[in-house]
Length: 567
Image 1 (cartoon, rainbow, N blue to C red):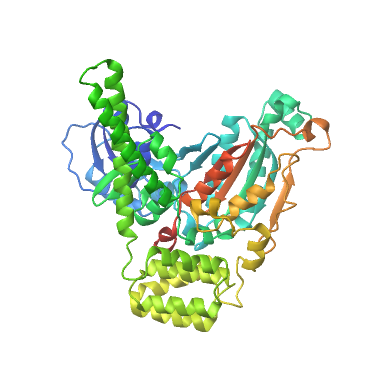
Image 2 (cartoon, helix red, strand yellow):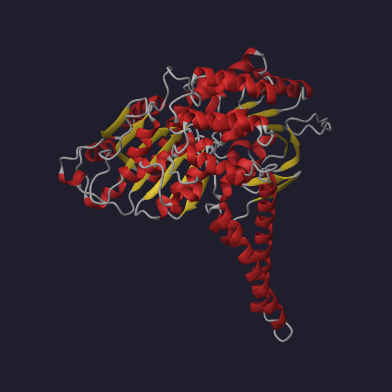
């Protein structure tokens, strides 16, 4: 249900949790939202506010995390006697409402409504991203809660209905991925049973492969992955424009904080060109654009001395807007470069080269451990960078020796503080760090890398997102899709990763109609449980731009190394 429909147009005061302001503003300019929802005043949920006794109703919009229950209780007590309408996100809405009931607060609230918050972003002409704005990585792997697959099934089911798509083949890898598939198939069967007779007849006809060639656009492949299949793509430093900004400054959907100022990524031809581009190339592009635009602007200003027509004025305004956009992204880039200015001789390129040596296994295990120990005491790298590198070593060398893990733990605690002991324990629990002898998600990195060609000799693609590395999800999709025959995993070897692999057809392909293949315009749906990085999105965009198919990517959120380690 749309948020405007939920809260209505009657005059009201509005209380909103700060973290929801960015997604709300992304979906609709807040000034327009405020006007259409007839909001008299806006206040932060985190603040303490005394309202005038004007008796206007009050709408509160917050996340349904249980830590918000005590804060909401304070608000309800403060607003005693006022009409309170509560809107909560769908994250944990049932348990949230149960807790409200246990606290005896339900009777003090006029209405409680859940809002299905999802953000949709076109990344290129034939690729859309939809994500739920959830931070579910830790709950998925540290606490092993099962609700995320269910939420993503709800989102996918909604898209299938809206886009009139029919899944004809499913590919899945991993425990949570297969839970997702089972839940989806149950949902599809339930939907079928609830259809009217005409719709059910058509659905069964498609399932039996009897649809006509004209209907083959309905056919789509579903590919389901989960985050722990490829932790490397989270740990490696992202090299594309948005990826480096997210790691350095932190992106909140469409804005980034520079000092204390929020700066928004405005949609523009310049932003469209650079957002997936290698960061170094993007900086060069911005410099060239700045010079070119200034030159054009100066020429046009000269013309205004003899010509002040509407056309000239319009061109001047367009050039001024383009100059402002270049200046904005130049400023953001300068902030990033300041963040990357690591002390002394240990610089960003040294870090990238070390990571490159690890993923190509050009260094021995012993030398890799010695380098990390040296860097811990060199005071050049922060704790997150060191933990990132330890995780990469653990994955690429199939685990750490227990003695090395103990030494590194002592060094990290001594250098960075006791809190990092518990973080190391967490990284073991979620599977980023493994002690040799214990089961690991990736049983043999060398085998996996070689079979899927994850490390590219030619950096032309890998350099978009990571130095010489193609994310596993991108490489599996590339090897799965075929322009001449049905998608298959004949060339995909995932035996080096623990977890069930599924390749299942949902239609009868023995019939002529079902066997017909329409590649151009057909849809590939990619579900990533546990979050995607901006670098992976850049790599997927590169793949989509060179494909005849349409791509829909669904995930719970955008993730980076800091979010994994610090949350």
